[in-house]
Length: 593
Image (tube, rainbow, N blue to C red; front, side, top):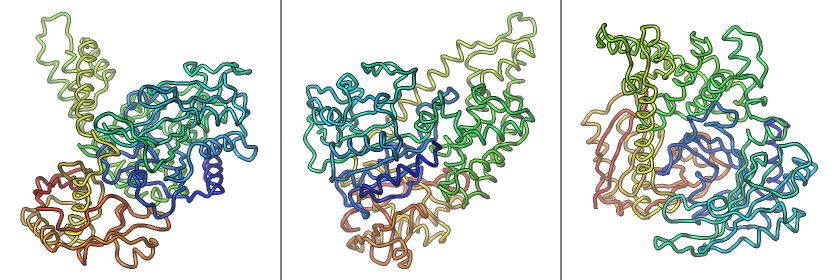
């Protein structure tokens, strides 16, 4: 079964079970301070998982594009990816464990669905602890469907519990489904630590709220959130050991071979560098389709890192000519039917790849000059000439030189490289980055307080004011809100003048002073556009949307939390305006009470 067939079967199945199909949300989260990218299908649904009414009902399903960067350094092995597609279905206070498990079982084993033999399946359930009991309901349901007790593992919270995303908020047990990839027959007794059992689906049951005191209280609205990875399941159904061996990557490898001028290579013989190149170009293409361009901070920095890492790895396999735009064209052609934003943004995406590749070539040239300066400082009479680990890491961090490139250049000059010192510097850098990310993105599903609702509302006023001052070319490119401040990214080519910033500030505060009630109406996308409502991320909405109106000042399609009246916001103050990435500016602002 190919990936396109898996997507279709999944969507058709859940549509037949009364689920409404929603489009994939942008890879750039709307007002979620916990992540840089959309990492799961549930992220765009946070307001509805917390009790808000979704315009399209209580049963939803989709294919969500996702980016996860936590394992970026692992990409290149047979399994890790930064970009992937997630199949999901949700119950927002409608059905719960019994129905969710029934749906999962039917889709996995049904003859018209995946038709997986029962003897290749096993499941895990939550074992229970001092905070929440053993998930007897899930255990009994799986038994009733024919799963042997020996194939149902009871696992602790670290394995079978989701959330909360922050310190407090919705959470609950989950049940995970596994497929036997080893030789038949599969073991009678399921051992979840045996890696030949591969997880293919996860049903999360949000039934508790963790309080600030550490108590787990039953939720009034119980939800189901599920996830199945397209790439992983496609590989499993095809009997492949790796998703890189499927049709999802074959065209990219073929283009890579063509650009290198080498004959077709057996798929199983692909090198780590080859896998990094095709994976990172695919991920970068999707990120750019959602309006991000390479830059120095946040999503723009991740994008630049992906592209430049792909270029460095391509050099290792002999590809030094410009290639990224040609590879990106393959991604666009293969996915644009399902994700039309790729086709719509094709020209801009290919231009950005070419521009970034040229810029990186210039950076490498500067790096080589810097390398020459570093070794020139070492006296000629020293016999054991060494490039220090600190300097090797400096070349990596500043100019993108992989350690192997520095080592090759050093060897040509009679130097060695302090690899141990490099690894220490690299590990220290990673630890600092991790701590910074934890601090920056702490929070989670529960962080929808009055303060964040007011700041969210302020982004609408800011968006409208920017369009009035700078022009209608201004469009939101990203938003990040926590309880203290808002951060708003928008399309604009130039640095704003102080006069423009002062005028934007004045307009927002004028709208706040008007004490306008904030109205919310559900309508179709066509009705919203007919009323000149602004859409934050283009054509990424379902048939019905929520439109928030603030008098004649602002009218936007949105699904996040809002204040009841503009007068609740206090005084709006811009703290900083800066570049986010090429053609995108960023404003940080606060509400002073």
